[in-house]
Amino acid sequence: DAKTTQPNSMESNEEEPVHLPCNHSTISGTDYIHWYRQLPSQGPEYVIHGLTSNVNNRMASLAIAEDRKSSTLILHRATLRDAAVYYCILTNFGNEKLTFGTGTRLTIIP
Amino acid sequence: KAGVTQTPRYLIKTRGQQVTLSCSPISGHRSVSWYQQTPGQGLQFLFEYFSETQRNKGNFPGRFSGRQFSNSRSEMNVSTLELGDSALYLCASSLQGVDNYGYTFGSGTRLTVV
Image (cartoon, helix red, strand yellow):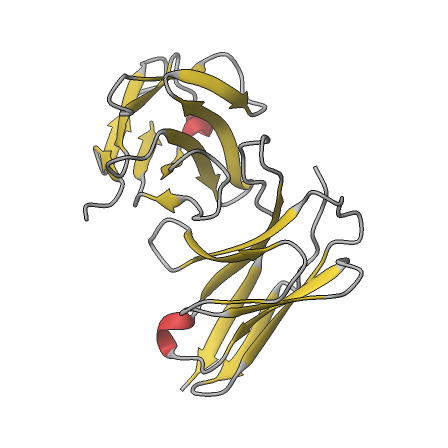
């Protein structure tokens, strides 16, 4: 499985944008980039995914580099409820599993 | 709509016993996956079922097994429990696997082996 690299932790002030980076230099042409987050005492939660183009949904935006070797999850206006561990995962349709790394622990400062 | 339901929420077992965990997926979801989460190893994939067939399996010993029923409900079984099997076991469902809608996870079953 292709590997992703994320910072162990990040801090951000409440109501400010947050940019969570992910490196995936060995990504293959058919790998999708998925983001999940895990809030304390809960199971992981799907956030967003993309292949080549930038993606937006109600939770976040995903910016994918042109060479696809890195991506950034953008939370436009962080709230205290966004404090969680964020996982960047490469997936491939037909390989039905999520390989979680250590993720980035995001702390929101009030 | 109802989310992914896992039962029981908490379980305490003794070494050597066996345990069965249950997962009810979101209505209409045909793919069910199981994950183990421990402080040391993080989230690890156990197996995935689709329409009663196991499509993918993680690197766990044969003591870990699972099955899926015709109504998509799934169970996982761990036999001959070891202390190291203490973990949060998470079930996730999706329409058809890694698709455009992502997996929905349950809150998990916390298993403690003593």
